[in-house]
Each structure stands twice: as C-alpha cells, then as structure tokens.
Length: 211
View 1 (cartoon, rainbow, N blue to C red):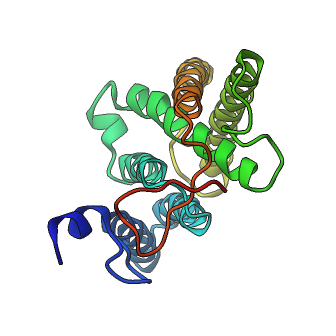
View 2: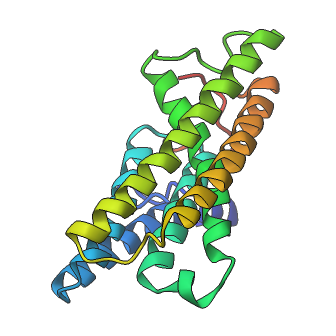
C-alpha cells in the first residue's frame, strides 16, 4: 500500500479509509456503553454514528465526509466523556463547528436528491446567494433539532445536556454563526466548480464527476 492510498483510502470495499475507522469507533462506542448499561451515552453515540453512516451511503467528497465524521465524533465523545464540564469553551467550539461542517453536507445530500440545485449548475450571483441562504437555514435547523434532542434526552434518558434558557439561546447563536460560515464555504466550493462530486471507488487521486 503506497502513501497516497494509505492517506486517501480505498483500502477495501468495507473499510475504505481512516474516516471509516472513525465511524467504527463511534459504532463501537455506542455498543460498549449499551452493554455497560449507560443508555444515555449509548444513545448519543448511536445518533452520531447514524449520521456518519448516512454520509458514507451518499458517497460524499472526502473533505466533506471527513468533516461530518469529525464533527459527530467531537459532539458524541464530548458528551459521553464530560468534556463540556471539563473545558469551559468546549461547548462553544462544538456549536460553532457542528453546523459549519454539517450544513454543506445536508445541502449536497439534498442536491443528490434533486431537491435543491446542484452547486455547479449555475454560476451567477443569485445562484450563490440561494445556496448560502438555504445552507445557512439548514445549519440553523440542525442546531435547533439538537437543542430539542437535548431537552427530550434529559427527560427521557436521564442525561444532563441542557443547562437552561441562557445556554440554549447561546448555543443557537453559535449554531447560526457556524451555519453561516459553512454556507460561505460551500459557496466557495461551488464558485471553483467542484459541485456535488461523488467519491469514486478505486480512485483516490481526484474526485471530478458530478452527482
């Protein structure tokens, strides 16, 4: 195995690269905590793992596949290992990076389904504005859904994720900033003509085909 293949992947059809290894760590963590009787931690990691498996299924470009997998790992293990309590600004970091990394992925997934225009279908300013608005809205929605999950998880699973209205509103502000940043990054991606490219099995030198 040469260095390029080691770094970029295509190791095997099942475990393709280091991104898949990180996905398996999330799945394994969920199973471990379930057997240990910690339902709250198992549920958090299971949700994060499910998101990364969905990203794998749509063959995202490697940069976005890595982004969403790292974001889910940061969120999931941050919760179960108590990093939010140990580091004052860890929560701020997650709520900025999670929408920033996942909002463009949601947009690309919707483009694959022909729900929204593919980023490389048009090249004019109004098209880029539309991409930015929709992507930012998707990111803010992801943040809002997570806050709902925290609220219900505390009630149903006995977790301690939500710390009150001030915490929730501060998280939503950071979610919005992260979503706006992610939207800007996707516009840059579209501007340079990369579009909604798919990962090409067996090819790790470039990804240059449209959805």
